[in-house]
Length: 228
Image (cartoon, rainbow, N blue to C red; front, side, top):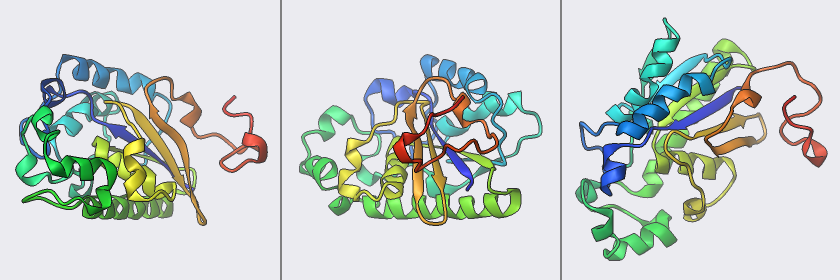
């Protein structure tokens, strides 16, 4: 069972400006986001990656740059399917203004029914992202084995929708999940069911370093002893 590490991009200029960036080009990391990205190589130290995949948007590729620089020869692959949701006419608008839109209540309470004007539905967003993750998981496991780890850098709503699918949660519940900028979420897809290993983690990630089986693992009765 390969392990997927999902990294949300670092804090962006749109985050601090209160804008819904969506797919607006040129949205960069702010000073704090750049510092978060710079700290990522140390947080992920010792974890080998069979593949590194990113949303094509600048704030994601920028987040991964320090990690790639620290690992010469690591190839970055972009995949449109984990790009930000297409918010259509909402793109670039202030979140404070969007809060007054009737659709916002639907987005928060019944997202499976939400379709952004001129954009995509949240169901379509989740479907493409989940298909992408599962296809990459199968590819990595086939080519690199069950202990392989691969990384994807994406966006908050994308990561939350992937986690909701892995947990068997209806999309209408995905707003109960949270992933901070540059946080790490980890999933393992087994033959019968996925496991959530970490959600929105901003601390040490040493427990994700591959190691020989020690009796503990996802689904261990009693919860297991955790990482040594």
